Amino acid sequence: MSTPKTTMAGPVYLTLPAGDPDPVAGCRQCLGIAVTRANARSVGDHSKVTDANVVLRTHLREDHGAE
Picture 1 (tube, rainbow, N blue to C red):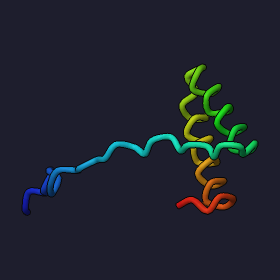
Picture 2: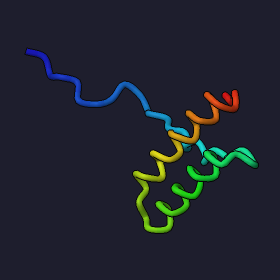
Picture 3: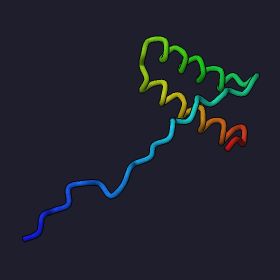
Picture 4: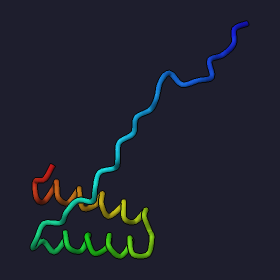
C-alpha cells in the first residue's frame, strides 16, 4: 500500500480583484447604480457592493458598448 500524496502540486497565484467600474457621465441608470453601490459601501454591505458592480458592468456592456 502506497502513501497518498497530501501536498499541492504547486503554488496558487491570485490576482487583485478588478476595481469598481466607472459610471458613464450623464447616464441616469449608471448614476443610480453607483449611488446604490456607495450606500452599500457606507454601511459595510460588501455583498451588495459586489452585486452593484456586476449590475453596472452588465449595464455598461449592454447599453454603452463597454467591454
